[in-house]
Amino acid sequence: MTSKRPLVLASASPARLGLLRQAGFEPRVVVSGVDEDAITAPSPAELARVLAVAKAEAVAGGGLLTGGELVVGCDSVLDLDGAALGKPKDAADATARWQAMRGRSGVLRTGHCVIDRANGRRVSRTASTTVRFGTPDDAEIAAYVASGEPLSVAGAFTLDGRSAPFVEGVDGDPGNVIGLSLPLLRLLLAELDVRITDLWA
Image (tube, rainbow, N blue to C red; front, side):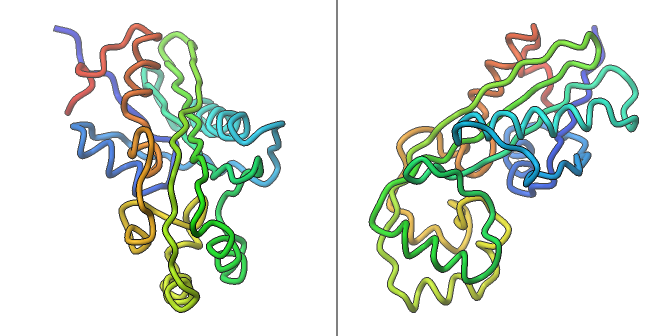
């Protein structure tokens, strides 16, 4: 019987870690330290992908790992009218985002990159999920921004937090909006000849 491959999450996101744990994994978390503001790309989907690659590469080559790990890097942006919206700069920015998003739809793009440190192989792709926003009034938006939650998440909202009542629905993988698409992770691992069930804790 072969030993279980170590899984490493190259992200500080508690939501991504929570998704992996709920799905049966116990990844080691190693934060990449990548300067997200220094990376650009021609589209929101490509930006999410190259950010994920940068994070996975930084952790895979950072000297903290031993050699046989599978490193998973992810990054999310909200695509609204072709603009890539990451974490808001401040409370005023978060408020303006919500005033622009309410009653509309955006596309949450999450880039995924998996690097197999045993052989250097890597794969990357972006998953996209349409998010239909509700119509919170100005007082509700102000209360949500005051909670501090939107300042730490891409697009200034979450599906599993205080803004859940302000999201009417999603078209696509809801996990992708939370931060990681488990169906896409399964496909990427398969491209590296790794069966996802073999990584369960």
